[in-house]
Image 1 (spheres, rainbow, N blue to C red):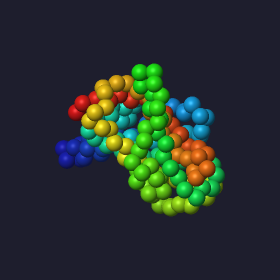
Image 2 (cartoon, one colour):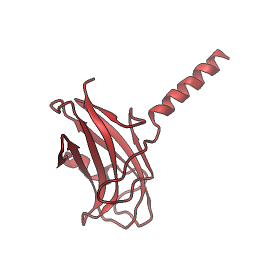
Image 3 (cartoon, rainbow, N blue to C red):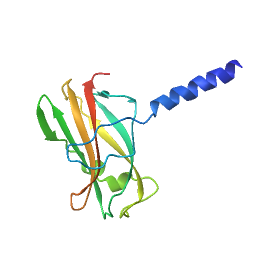
Image 4 (cartoon, rainbow, N blue to C red):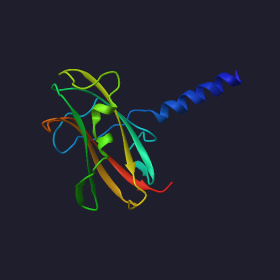
Length: 153
């Protein structure tokens, strides 16, 4: 009985680490993903640990066909909004699709992951991050916003 109880606690603990996050809509009005998971974050604000990578997984239905997909990230902190430039290999969302590949079809269920670096030089601030996926013509397929804060480990 004790082993069963330990197993139940372990399963519940693991489940809480991968629980979907309720996100906010982006300012561009793009459709939100049906599911967003951020490792270590089950409610906002999400803690972004300096010197680490933030792993995100999102599910969405493609509102249109696309030849290529690219991640866009915009951060707002201390009243300043600026694009967050991802390394090219991470910005190419086609590299991070699960169960499909580019090009994608309209109505296709898409699961994609993003690993976003949090550099050690970032200040310890609260911020809003918008993460989007755009096609080759810069049309937004999905977008979500989160409240976050940069913290030390």
